[in-house]
Image (cartoon, rainbow, N blue to C red):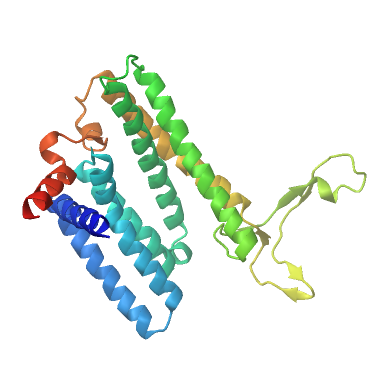
Length: 283
């Protein structure tokens, strides 16, 4: 029990140091945290306990960038950390609780593009750190590293779409948002069963069990949304992979890439070790 308490104290102190390391990201973290807490209080008064859970989850996620930096001893550039914090807030609080996914059709598209970009940055950093480790005897080309980062990002995007599909099928949610279309092509409508797609144009309404849905078209169940999400994830991943390629090729000369690619912490920024030393001295 004492050992666990000590480890908890060390981690808490290290996180405190990490959060305060960069003034700009710390200000963003504090502002977003206050907004989430205010939102949580409002949801408690409204007795919307599902949203209260989302607020609690958001508070945990906002700490995760600092936790990862402390635990894995990597340094997230300030710009990247701020982007991640805003991404979490935009996805959970604005997207889910404030219904921005419904109010603004582009909201989901923007976040999935950012997700592709951020996932590529993380994948690239993992390979770059491994590639620069002295214990590893091989060196990877910039092109190969860019491809790995791109594939890592796309894999994360696909896994997320699997998650959305699973939640919709198992729990009856609608994470894969539906799309209204006015024409369809399907071989299921071919009376000859010859695998020939039959087109229905100008669909303005759909009747289910004798009741009009009143949507102004045919309801596509999630497929278009999924493919659109993967497409914009592709765009975000491709953009960062190109940035990462030139970053490695010119070895860190690009100002934009240098401000977005995580790297190993220097010894003086190893807050976990510093916290352990401070706690040992106090004991």
